Structure formats: C-alpha cells, structure tokens
Length: 272
Image (cartoon, rainbow, N blue to C red; front, top):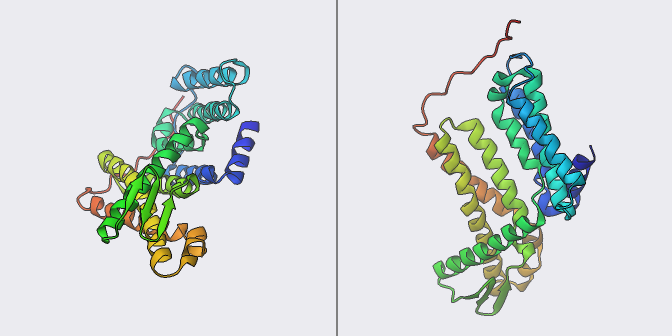
C-alpha cells in the first residue's frame, strides 16, 4: 500500500502527475463496462504465474537492490510491480479468458506508474521546444515578425520565454489519457486507435503554441495585463478544450467507415 499512497501523494502535490488520479477510477469503470460474466477457473501454471513471479522480482529489486538509488525511480518500479501483481491476481481469480476481455482497462493501469523525473524532464523539454516552434509558426501565419532562439521568442514589443511551467505537461498528459479512453470505447480497428492516440501528441503541442501566440498577441497589441491575467494563469482549460475538440473531429472522421461494431464477447464459467 505504501507505493500506492506515495503515488497518490505525488499526484496531489505535483501538477506534472495530476493525470494519475484519473487512472484507477477509469480502469475500474472500463473493467465493469467490459465485464459480463465470470469465466475461467484459476490455473496455477499460466502466464499469470509468470507475471506474479516477475512482480515479486521487480519489487525485490526496487526494495533491496543497490542499483536503484533514486527515490522517484524506486517508486516507479514499485508501482510497476504492484500493477503487475493486480493484473496477475485478476488472471488467477477469473481466468485468462476474462483477462483477454478486460485487457485494455487492466493494462491501462500502467498509466498509474509515475514517470521517473529523468524521463519527465525530457518530455517537458520536448514540449517546451515544440510549443515554441508551434507559436513561431502561428506568429508567422498572422504575419507577426518573430525571432526564435531555442525556447525564447521575440516579437515587436515583447520577449517570450517558454519556461517549464509553460510547457503544459499536465494538460498534455491529460489529453493523452483521455484520447486513449475515447479510442478504446469508440473505435474498433487497432490502427485507427493508434492513429488517434498518436495525433494527441502534436495536438498537445499545437494547443500550447496557440496559447502562447494568443497571450502574446493580446499582451503586445491589446493590453499588457493579459500577460499576467487570468487567461495566462487559468486559461489552460480553454485551450485543452480546443485540443479536445480537435480529437473529437479526428474521431468523427475515423469512425466513418470503421465498420460494424464487433459483437460482444460473453464469457461462461468453465466446467471442472
């Protein structure tokens, strides 16, 4: 329980991990949505047993190993082992047939594993540079002279620095998680699901570039108070909804010709 509590504490206190709070309830709802009847009897020597053994080994490596010194990396490994334990316990209890039916919501739980800071910092840096480039192109589209130097932008009357706080990593991860759920629920073919989820990444960068461009234009041409006002501090939800609208538009396009909905898979208990 300690790794789970530590993970939730991290999600509450660090904006970069807020999306973790959605994963567990979403996974539970999706599992119930996919669950029809109990199926499959426990089988000790199944892939579930291998998963349990792997979870134990990973937990031991994280708790007693000397190679994992970083606390955030140790927490990530412990949570990975805990999720593996949950999935294996589900397979033991209800059988592999039930595991196949509930495959997505169960493995969706992997999103609850906190991203180690070393990886998260690279993601943030990528979002910073991507957002600066997107904002640069938007300024050029509106015929505003702009000079970019790394993550710094200069337009007439204003210099903009795309800091780590401006990377919008929280809303980007939220958009990615939401898109995964929408793709699972509303699309049938795997390749269409993959396309939709992959498009969430450039849409995240584009919506953050739009936010930077909008605030920069308003702050330099209308009123400087826009640079520190509510739109700058609390306006992230507006641009998140714009990106989400883009996801729904792509989803609508992909659903056309996606085929007839596949029949539901019903499970029946195996006879002893």
